[in-house]
Length: 116
Ligand SMILES: [Zn+2]
Image 1: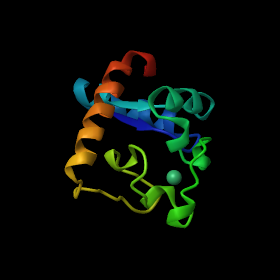
Image 2: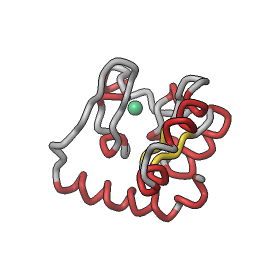
Image 3: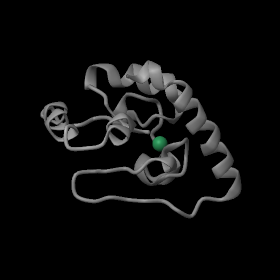
Image 4: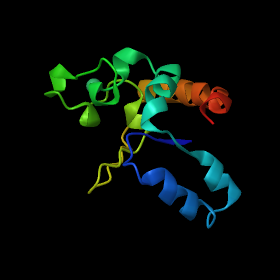
């Protein structure tokens, strides 16, 4: 499942247009979360200590030079980060990390109803 957070204001409108061209499974795997609801939804899925401060959480990744986007802390490496001009993928996960991610993705699936 993909959660789109911190998206520009036009995004939910653009998503509604694009959505119609995608198959149902893909449509359902993407949730666009408004800025007003993103803090609540993220804190239901992720420990507030692991949510970057720019999304309203407590994580600043001081030990990584303040860069939450490139650190391995929390479940973030599970997600593709899509900043405006580049896409970053992380495929070199160690075993411990994968177990943690599987746990977290199960948790996210369990919470899927709450996210809609
Ligand atoms: Zn961080």
